[in-house]
Image (cartoon, rainbow, N blue to C red; front, side, top):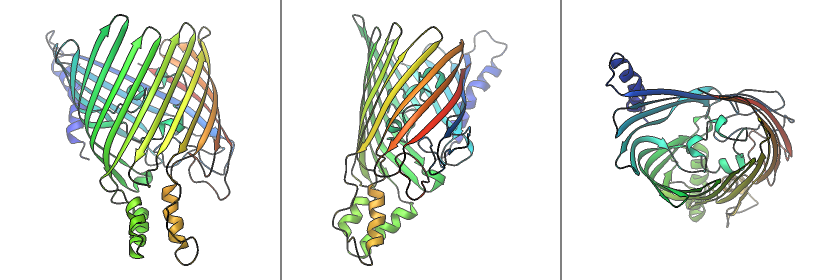
Length: 400
């Protein structure tokens, strides 16, 4: 995807700020940022713990790459109805090196007091915390549960959305619809997944300490350049297993993700929970069900918390009708590898957040991951790896 127009939009607020430096009638420009500096390690060298989309993770030696990032955002308010926003993000994603990406770059039009229209690159409303997914300081936990947040590896969409907010009684309803397209790279740039005809809806109802959220994303997607997938599909087609080949290939397939969320922030108590279901026409993107629940309790500047998370595969983990013995057994094994790509895993996590500053916190988190029927969300497992695995992380989050 060509980034030149988006980079220009990201730089525009800064250019406008400089151009109007001596004028009191120019646009208002605000610069803000966020970041996390974290060390993460596990208790095993048999597999690597990583976040979704990362090429490599951590073993028993502590590393910074898994949970660390840095972002900066610029917004230029041109007038009462138009603003421009750009956000850049530095993190480890796709490759095992820190790299920069343009997360947001959009123009926002205020149509009425209740309705806003945005055009450009925006956050895709997949999850309850999609708008601040990368802002560690805005979240109670050190990282979002990987069981839930590995189900959709898309964070933004190039297109248009509309956000309408209305109040009735003590409640506020925010409705968002978005359409557009997006793409993402596989680990190590091994393939490109292209998502077209993306359509999403996000409904958030707030009443006092309670927040209820519903989201649904539907899309068509293609993966045409995966060498390993094309080899399996081509082999199945060559030997007459056309139906099996068609069930695995990813070309103009439909997929969706539907989720429900609940948030409670009442007195000192914090509760956050999400439930999500992924559906796909291709066995290479298996159907899944995932959920988590977090409980926290504020005690002054300290917030201890606990969360439990789970993900399971709903679609078959084998491709029906293929030989399990003989010269084509290897081809069947390759097909079943793609059909069983979804992780099956549960985890229990405990952590502590210390708000030692108005704009920074320190977090400690201990996770116990239990993969089932495979390596779960872990990468590069050695033969015989089963888990469970303990992961420890310490992080400082900050905003400015």
